[in-house]
Image 1: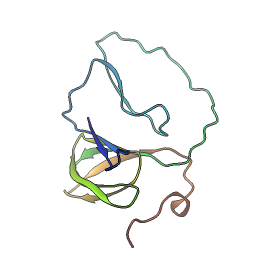
Image 2 (image 1 turned 30 degrees about the horizontal axis):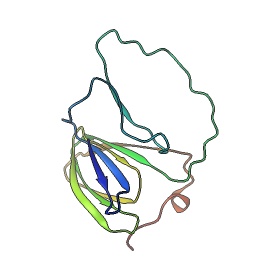
Image 3 (image 1 turned 120 degrees about the horizontal axis):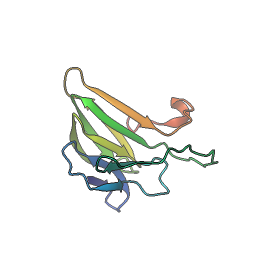
Length: 136
């Protein structure tokens, strides 16, 4: 796991490479107050997670946060801080995952048949309400 931070220390994104070592048990990558939560779990055979259902809970969501998982191919990721300054760019490869928490981001498809999953918090209110372009 690698954290991408702004110059003033804001956590902008978390990059988890496909070949990143896993810890035994549960590892939570996001803070409890983030609008999206991500954890990895590695347990021996026979481990039981009790069946459960989540309660309805009123939450105030003020920021869209996303997770991208590269299923096939590669993406060039560019991560920007809150002032629209590019902090870092790097390649996401098959099996890599990125959590986008703050600031801006952009992606370029690098290979044929690149496919990735995107997960973000909702509800989705449309492009006009949800985002703005960093550069016109």
